[in-house]
Length: 151
Image (cartoon, rainbow, N blue to C red):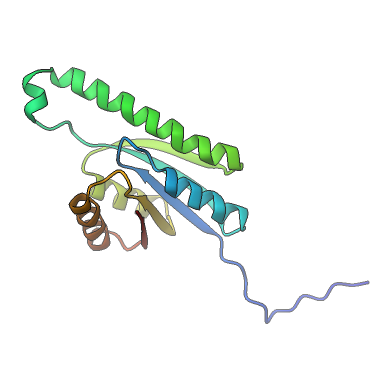
Protein backbone atom coordinates (compact mmCIF):
# COMPACT_ATOMS: atom_id res chain seq x y z
CA UNK A 1 0.00 0.00 0.00
CA UNK A 2 1.40 3.35 -1.00
CA UNK A 3 1.20 6.26 1.45
CA UNK A 4 -0.02 9.49 -0.07
CA UNK A 5 1.33 12.78 1.29
CA UNK A 6 -1.33 15.39 1.89
CA UNK A 7 0.21 18.80 1.23
CA UNK A 8 -2.80 20.52 2.84
CA UNK A 9 -1.75 19.41 6.33
CA UNK A 10 0.10 22.04 8.35
CA UNK A 11 3.80 21.39 8.85
CA UNK A 12 5.09 21.08 12.36
CA UNK A 13 7.36 23.96 13.29
CA UNK A 14 10.40 22.92 15.27
CA UNK A 15 11.85 25.57 17.54
CA UNK A 16 15.28 26.38 18.84
CA UNK A 17 15.00 27.42 22.50
CA UNK A 18 17.29 29.63 24.51
CA UNK A 19 17.11 29.04 28.26
CA UNK A 20 19.07 31.63 30.26
CA UNK A 21 20.11 30.98 33.83
CA UNK A 22 20.02 34.33 35.62
CA UNK A 23 19.58 33.38 39.26
CA UNK A 24 20.99 30.95 41.80
CA UNK A 25 17.76 28.95 41.68
CA UNK A 26 18.51 27.95 38.09
CA UNK A 27 16.04 27.66 35.23
CA UNK A 28 14.21 24.56 36.40
CA UNK A 29 10.76 25.57 35.17
CA UNK A 30 12.17 26.57 31.78
CA UNK A 31 13.99 23.23 31.53
CA UNK A 32 10.79 21.34 32.39
CA UNK A 33 8.84 23.31 29.79
CA UNK A 34 11.60 22.74 27.22
CA UNK A 35 11.57 19.00 27.98
CA UNK A 36 7.81 18.92 27.46
CA UNK A 37 8.12 20.75 24.13
CA UNK A 38 10.87 18.34 23.07
CA UNK A 39 8.70 15.33 23.94
CA UNK A 40 5.92 16.86 21.83
CA UNK A 41 8.38 17.20 18.88
CA UNK A 42 8.14 20.99 18.94
CA UNK A 43 11.78 21.63 19.88
CA UNK A 44 14.87 20.48 18.04
CA UNK A 45 17.58 22.34 19.90
CA UNK A 46 18.08 23.91 23.31
CA UNK A 47 20.84 26.28 24.25
CA UNK A 48 21.43 27.09 27.91
CA UNK A 49 23.16 30.35 28.68
CA UNK A 50 24.58 30.86 32.15
CA UNK A 51 24.70 34.63 32.71
CA UNK A 52 27.15 35.93 35.30
CA UNK A 53 26.81 39.60 36.08
CA UNK A 54 29.57 41.67 37.61
CA UNK A 55 29.63 41.37 41.38
CA UNK A 56 28.56 44.81 42.56
CA UNK A 57 29.85 46.85 45.39
CA UNK A 58 27.41 46.05 48.16
CA UNK A 59 27.59 45.85 51.92
CA UNK A 60 28.85 42.29 51.53
CA UNK A 61 31.96 43.54 49.69
CA UNK A 62 32.90 45.51 52.80
CA UNK A 63 33.37 42.21 54.67
CA UNK A 64 34.62 39.92 51.89
CA UNK A 65 36.97 40.39 48.98
CA UNK A 66 35.58 40.80 45.46
CA UNK A 67 37.52 37.68 44.42
CA UNK A 68 35.80 35.65 47.12
CA UNK A 69 32.40 37.04 46.15
CA UNK A 70 33.02 36.23 42.47
CA UNK A 71 34.08 32.68 43.36
CA UNK A 72 30.96 32.18 45.49
CA UNK A 73 28.71 33.53 42.72
CA UNK A 74 30.38 31.25 40.15
CA UNK A 75 29.95 28.20 42.42
CA UNK A 76 26.29 28.98 43.09
CA UNK A 77 25.57 29.52 39.40
CA UNK A 78 27.41 26.27 38.54
CA UNK A 79 25.07 24.42 40.91
CA UNK A 80 22.09 26.13 39.26
CA UNK A 81 23.41 25.04 35.85
CA UNK A 82 23.83 21.43 37.00
CA UNK A 83 20.27 21.29 38.38
CA UNK A 84 18.88 22.76 35.16
CA UNK A 85 20.88 20.39 32.94
CA UNK A 86 19.81 17.37 35.02
CA UNK A 87 16.18 17.95 34.03
CA UNK A 88 17.08 18.06 30.33
CA UNK A 89 19.37 15.02 30.70
CA UNK A 90 16.60 13.00 32.37
CA UNK A 91 14.23 13.85 29.50
CA UNK A 92 16.81 13.05 26.81
CA UNK A 93 16.83 16.60 25.46
CA UNK A 94 19.97 17.48 23.47
CA UNK A 95 21.41 20.83 24.50
CA UNK A 96 24.47 23.00 24.44
CA UNK A 97 25.50 25.51 27.06
CA UNK A 98 27.79 28.45 27.45
CA UNK A 99 28.71 31.02 30.05
CA UNK A 100 28.56 34.74 29.33
CA UNK A 101 29.47 37.76 31.44
CA UNK A 102 27.70 41.08 31.68
CA UNK A 103 24.23 42.56 32.09
CA UNK A 104 21.72 39.71 31.80
CA UNK A 105 19.23 41.48 29.54
CA UNK A 106 21.86 42.48 26.95
CA UNK A 107 23.63 39.11 27.06
CA UNK A 108 20.38 37.17 26.59
CA UNK A 109 19.32 39.37 23.65
CA UNK A 110 22.75 38.98 22.04
CA UNK A 111 22.76 35.19 22.51
CA UNK A 112 19.25 34.89 21.07
CA UNK A 113 20.26 36.89 17.99
CA UNK A 114 23.61 35.15 17.41
CA UNK A 115 22.24 31.66 18.08
CA UNK A 116 19.14 32.21 15.92
CA UNK A 117 16.86 31.25 18.79
CA UNK A 118 13.16 31.10 18.01
CA UNK A 119 12.08 31.56 21.62
CA UNK A 120 13.62 32.62 24.92
CA UNK A 121 12.23 30.76 27.94
CA UNK A 122 13.05 32.95 30.92
CA UNK A 123 12.54 31.26 34.28
CA UNK A 124 11.92 34.19 36.62
CA UNK A 125 10.96 32.18 39.72
CA UNK A 126 14.25 33.14 41.38
CA UNK A 127 13.78 36.86 40.75
CA UNK A 128 11.87 39.36 42.81
CA UNK A 129 8.79 41.08 41.42
CA UNK A 130 10.51 44.24 40.18
CA UNK A 131 13.56 42.38 38.85
CA UNK A 132 11.28 39.95 37.01
CA UNK A 133 9.27 42.60 35.21
CA UNK A 134 12.26 44.86 34.69
CA UNK A 135 14.13 42.02 32.98
CA UNK A 136 11.12 41.18 30.84
CA UNK A 137 10.63 44.82 29.79
CA UNK A 138 14.30 45.20 28.86
CA UNK A 139 14.32 41.95 26.88
CA UNK A 140 11.13 42.96 25.09
CA UNK A 141 12.85 46.22 24.08
CA UNK A 142 16.26 44.74 23.20
CA UNK A 143 15.35 41.49 21.43
CA UNK A 144 13.33 40.67 18.36
CA UNK A 145 13.08 37.07 19.63
CA UNK A 146 9.86 36.31 21.52
CA UNK A 147 10.30 35.89 25.27
CA UNK A 148 8.14 33.66 27.45
CA UNK A 149 8.38 34.55 31.12
CA UNK A 150 7.81 31.64 33.49
CA UNK A 151 6.96 32.62 37.04
